[in-house]
Amino acid sequence: MMTEPELEQTTATPDTPDTPEPPKKPETPEPPETSDTSDTSDTPETSDTPEEETKESENDGIIFQAIGIVVGDVSWSDEGRAMLTMAGRDYPLFYTSRLRKAFNALKLEIKNTGEATQRLIVYPRVTHFPQRTKSHQISFQLVGFSKGEPDGVAAQLEDFEFQLRGLWQFIPVCRGPVVSIFRNFNRDRLDYIKQAEPAQKVRFMKASHLPLMWKDSPVKPFRFNPKTPKEEQGHPAFIQVKAKFLPTRNLFEFDALLAPPLDKAPKFLKASKADKTAVQQEKRQNKSKQKPTKGREKPEGKEQQSEGKEQKPTIKRQKPEVKKPKPEAKEPKPTTDEQKVEAKEPKPTTDEQKVEAKKPKPSKVRKRVKAKEQKPEDKQ
Image (cartoon, rainbow, N blue to C red; front, side, top):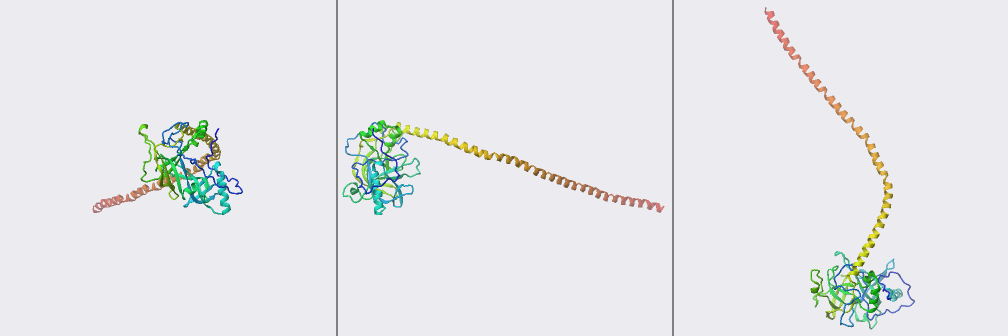
């Protein structure tokens, strides 16, 4: 049974050989393995076919391909991850187990010469995100490095030039058109796919969607319309172009046509909707299984916190007890009011006193009356 090639980024620092080995120049390099987070969704790049089936084409010798030259400073982080710096931007630089010798040779070359700036042969790798506001990320898989060879890819391409051969189309997770690089078909891969699990199939057949800026293209990029019947959808054209990578803009720009666009693409492998759906469901189930475990841990912490917080209710109960004297302290206030009322009560008494003080007035009148009564008596 065919073993699945390594797809994950390798960050370990392997033992370096005593003498650097020249990098291998692949005659027909494989497309880069990508980790497009949107691949698990039903992206309608092409019509869905079972994973055992392939797209037929009469164009023999033409393949899906994305390979090019970049120049930048190679460095390693404290964790051992290789980075490539171009135009002030850092790009992850990784390798697969199949090309580990090329990575070892590059590391030894930098160590022996002290020259961090290198001319590298790479496969581009793009990661798209479902969020429209989040921009795509580009990394590079090392194929080899150039030391002035007279032939091969390094001699055919200038700095930052890439050969892109793929389907010209739009995808839902990218605003601009892309060149989709699918897995080329061969019998060994087909045998592996037939025996692999759905997750392995989807992972192995992931496509790389490279954003390409191409004004006045001879063919329009294909755009899937869910409202249009399948018979009227059409299909994307297969293009072969030379493009420049722009580190400042983090995308590729059309430079020249390598061949006229083709209506039929070469044979390629593509994951089916059924496998993508199965992988999505498996991921959701794994997430749901992880949630209860996290939930169980939290209650234990909460129980400990609740034990510590059990004292708070007692403190709160004591607070009313402390506050009880306050209403008692406030009770004298009405007594003071009563005192005020009582203090105000003498006022009517003073009025009574005033009335009593005014009472002598009639007494004076009586005296006058009495005096008048006495006057006639005197006259008599």
